[in-house]
Image (cartoon, rainbow, N blue to C red; front, side):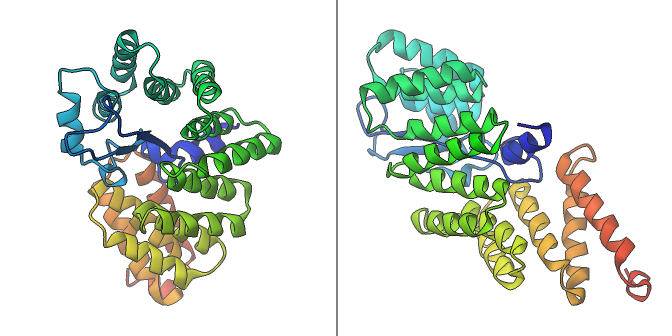
Length: 306
């Protein structure tokens, strides 16, 4: 996969302006994985720290789980969210040393290894889990992410598409696999399929903001600007960290710039992003580039009033 394609695919995880893939970690409710209330935990890893609203747990709850002394699969994922993949990998190895046959622990290990970009090992353990329990289909999501990360051709994308489609069969990760399919279809230029995947994800995840972000991007590319704006504004009604909100502002500005009567709205959104971001951050750079382009191309009479 080219460097630019990698930026496209990973951007949301690493703070770029473009939308990225997601990996879902689902912890089944067993003695090693549920909290005291029995609530199951789902985290979009590498996204959870900056986007806690995309997981079943708040950032504070993840911090509390990470600080616990006892070994648990939940703690592995909490460390991944709160401290990063290196600490989570150490915890996963400790856990599997004590519970060497626990497949839930191996699931966690596969996710952490992907986060560490130790792809050969992540692939090995994902397939190890599936060989022993084919119903643990969250592993197809990991395999799909690996296929995308290493993709060099359309055939590789097709392989990833098939893997994510298998992951959709798993109730615990269906919405994340559908999001992955949507963003993969965007990368492939298959806008009709991207639209369908995002609408399905929206239904499954109860209108989670990221599904509506995907819809906003896709509908804008389909020139369905009113619908794109509708879903982006619906998402912005959700509680989210400011840094997440700025990403939505950026994409909403891309929609509004297509209406000459709403250029000033677009510029205000871009200015809000620029004023809050560091000049070295990609979201700042992209927002500044779009703002400059708009000002260069708008009529002089309007430009003079801005």
